[in-house]
Length: 301
Picture (cartoon, rainbow, N blue to C red):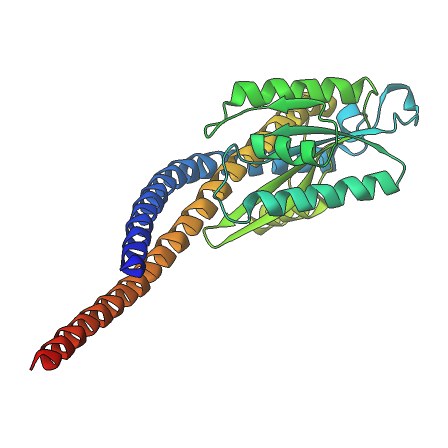
C-alpha cells in the first residue's frame, strides 16, 4: 500500500512539472519569435554599416582614426588593460547557453592574462555575476538590458567604451556572447569591438558587386573621407554591440525553448513509466488480497 501511495505522489509531481515546463516552452517560443524579428530587423543595417566602413576605408587609403587603433600623436604606449563584456541571461533553464558563453569567456581571460594583460570584466546578466562571484573574480560594472535591449542604453555604453579607448585608458574591448546563426545553431563567440578592424573580405565582396554591374567606382569624398569615417565608425561600434545583445536574447530564448521541450518530453515519458508501475503494483495488491480471501475461505471449510 505504501508503494502505491508513493507512486501516486510521484505521478502528481511529474504531471505538475510537465505543466510548468510546457508553459515555459510556450512563453519561450513567443519571446523567441519576437526577439528573432528584432534581430532580423537590425542585422541588414549592421551589415551595411560594416560594408560602408570597409568601402570608404579601402577607397580613402590610410586614414588616421583613433577607433582604428591609431591614436593621435602616433604614440604606441599601451595601457595594458582590456575590457571583456560577458553577456549572459538573467534566468536559468536555458540549456547550455550560459555554460558555453562563460567557458568561452574564461578561455579568453586566461589567454589575455598569459599575454600579461589586465582584463577588466563587465557583465550583462545575473548568471554572469553569480559565476564570477563563485570564481572570486572582481566585476568592474554590472549591466542589465533585459529581454528587449534599448538602443539608447547600448549606445551610452558604447560611447563610454570609445571615450576610454580614445583616451588611452584601455587597449581593447571584447564581447563574449552567443551568436545566433539559425534556430538549430548558436555559436559562443568573442567579438573584438575596439579597436575596429576593417574586414578586407567585406570590402572585396563590395568591390566585386560593383564590378559585376559593369562600372568601376571612383569616390569623390565630400566631406572628406576622414570626416565620413569619424561619423561612420562610432555608429559601427554601437550597432555591432546592439546586434550582439539582440543575438544573445534570441539565442537564450531558442535554447530555453529547446530545453523546456526536452523537459516536457522527459516528464511525459516518466509519467507513462510511473503509470505502468502503478498499475502493476495495484494488480499485485489485488492478486494478493484475492489469494488471502481464497486461502481464508478454504481454511474454514
